[in-house]
Length: 189
Image: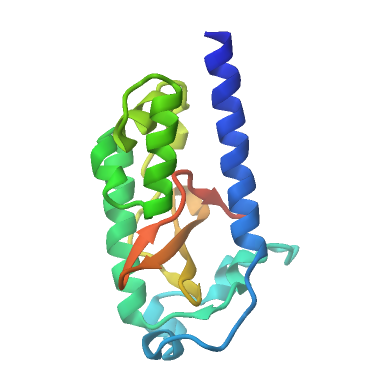
């Protein structure tokens, strides 16, 4: 049991490192597709990226890339809502259905490593056994307010309960937005 706990801690640290790597490699390139280049106005999005910047201004996620158009934002919002609903319901297969190919493969490897099975759903389910309820909660109270995009990578920004702002890494795969992480990022105030 102690070995499994240590492995879980190592896996969570690897996940956090992955978020840091994902966040740090943005280049603000201007080679975005047409729908990405048609940045929405704050009124269309319901919020601007500026409303997600912390008071101390140290949060880089709201400045990532550029603001996406409404089509991309709505598509990312739909898949993220599906992901959050599945996570909160502990529907691991439903959550796996929303993840990037690389993340699905990672959780398949974890399931085998933990001897919990062979599927993404079994890997997620095994790790979720020890996760606090707050980590598994659906933090969305409405659609994604802003999608910050750079090439095939993005952050979905949204306002959650009690005035907390959140972000979720996303990736465009085969023309569809997919969730690129299993844990929601809480943005600083």
